[in-house]
Image 1: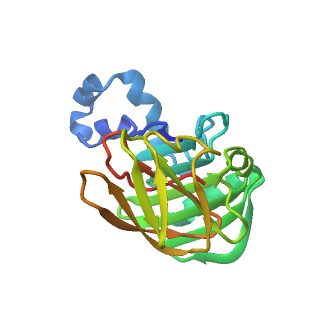
Image 2: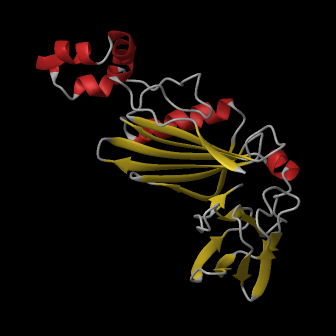
Length: 252
């Protein structure tokens, strides 16, 4: 599996803007006019316009934006796509933008668990691909956005779809030595470079909850940590090529 970051984008208009209007000409010389000038309408526009090139709905006006996708071998579509952005606009305007744009894409807003306040929004959706979630938080200079869409078919093809009401946990060893995981009093032994793809990788369907686990590698100190599993999620715990225990990766 792998996570692909499509790029953290900071519009070139901000490089010019922070220099101040007095030094606008020199800033345009430093940042090419072709890169900066198209962003002028985005900076001063009163409305939020959808960006047709974004993998998930996002306005063209932003101060920061990145999109991450989680993929697995032999599965064409991403299992999970995540958008993180900062939008220089009021939270109410950003919420209105997302409700309109997500509705156009067939996302159905769910009322259970919804939180809508002046400073924070948490909404759950059912999208054509699978479960989705939108979080908005009021920031000093606008609104932060966290939008996630999961692909049910892709997770099924990758053999990581959890059973209903449970969470899936997968183990991978990319190192050159055998490793031993101890999860909730269970012992899982992974040979060197084992479990790099499903369905060969060991996968556990577990009830939701917080689970302690330990990693043991010959010649290295034991490492102990915990993972919090939520129903419907799928996670991977990986030992890297150098024997390092990587941070858990959410697959779905």
